[in-house]
Length: 258
Image (tube, rainbow, N blue to C red; front, side):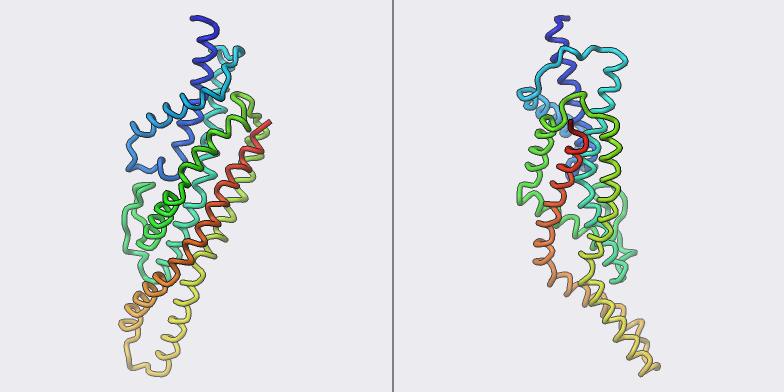
């Protein structure tokens, strides 16, 4: 094989490895209901587009060291996709907290991402977040960020120390996801806590009435009403969360870059 052609092919293989690994963990495209053929096709198309800004490296040779380069590029793609997916995980967590308060914890729907049962409100918030993400062209921003990663992190030049630093930062960012989930669920949790408090006071005052039968449907009804009232504010919160998502990808690139 011609040396120039071999260098180009090996470079494009590294680009494809990073792209395909990114689609394994990133939001939307990593979901089970997206056919694998579509993901592979999109990864190939973006690889060809990225070829215009990635120069073939004649130092790439098909040997044992090249296998390590493939592993590095796969880790780069996985970390970038994982950084983007953490916000959606926080949104699902917030929905699960609300369901626990409303009494919907046992009413499950199938999560489109993992293919496992998830609470109703958690699925609702996830669907709203995905639709809003598509409406503001967030998926295009993710692709632009992935294409920019080849400028921040040239092929084969990510260092193992950078992976450790990126993993440490993502661990802290994941811990912040719990705080984000609490902030999203706080209005609903506060309203339902007041309902529990009122039911408890009335139950102590009128012990003859079965307030478990009356209070449970009332909590569900009030929870649905409050959920509808906070939807506009939820979209405003999502804008800030998606900014955190893109910032997370940028932080990972800075730690992996040279």
